[in-house]
Image (cartoon, rainbow, N blue to C red):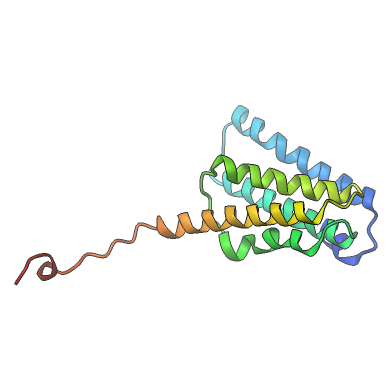
Length: 155
């Protein structure tokens, strides 16, 4: 529903904010529930996907409502081509970039246009975080090439 409303351009700001706040509250509740009831094997993946969809559609809604410049859509849109299915432990700066991205999106949804320089800096930080995640996953695939025995010893 939020996806269609965000793309139609007819959605009301309060409806979108309510939907995003509801998603955010559910996202905050899943961690304590998992700790209390025990995690499931699929839990971390679903949590990552829910966070990504919340960010993507929040950014789309903020853009459609005119509060977020197009550069604010870069990182949420490129998350799937760059880091699809990657579940890596985030470094503190990567978490901070994600928080800054959601703050910028919430700011734009609240009807206040964030400064373009801030949106661009946050987009660059989040793109760096995505690239670092994708790179660490790519380089840690564990592929090791064994050279033939003759290469190791002089002839």
